[in-house]
Image (tube, rainbow, N blue to C red; front, side, top):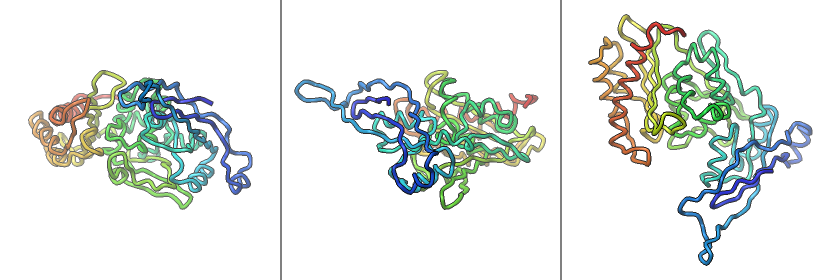
Length: 352
């Protein structure tokens, strides 16, 4: 048992079995009694801690979180069906544990799906790439399938934290977290990814642009989890790039990030162009006006500059601690120009 302390809560996380008689009868030996692996989280000293008015002592409330750790997908779906809104799914825990500490989410149960091994895979068949939801960013960086058919996703994965985080955080977790600053999301948008979800009722396939329905909101039902992500891979004749601007070179949340994919090459033009912008709206957005300005046109620096200027019109950024809305809008045009230029010109002749 480990304790997580913060200004508003002190959470004891311990592994436990499902307590329903139905589940214990069906799966008497399968629940793993294993503590959830978490990092030591230090006390948050930000302004806003609840203090005792007399002696300024920090008030800590205690609660206990049950961690259910099924071994198979079927067991996980059964538990999810039983608890639904009363349980929170956790895999790598890089987002959920921090959100628990900060009070962004509250739950008394965690469904630890990390032991479900058949959700961790990367496969390619006839040009279509499938990535299991428990695949880490380290898996994506090392996979020959993603290096060959989704190098823009590989580039994004390299930007996510340090090696420790890349080997812990999962792509399914990044989707479920639904942050508009999620680095893997713009590449998945331009790759035209499909999110496959599972519940005890069956499987659903949701286009990624319909999966996110608002700021940190998804189309997942309370009894569903993300099973895999699939997309048509890029080919040798396609072009693509990913660029990110943060406050520092590494381990930074995006101020703006951009992914581009160009398919259907015709000499110096492409018949299909997708441009996605991250951290400039409540969800990832497609720069449709920019895309239309590039489709079928001869790609010169002049063409790229004109299209990049249009991209800023599709953004609706906010001002926060990382940058103003005006700054973000200007950065969008610059990053889009650089990304398309890199995809079309800088990457020519590169081995994939």
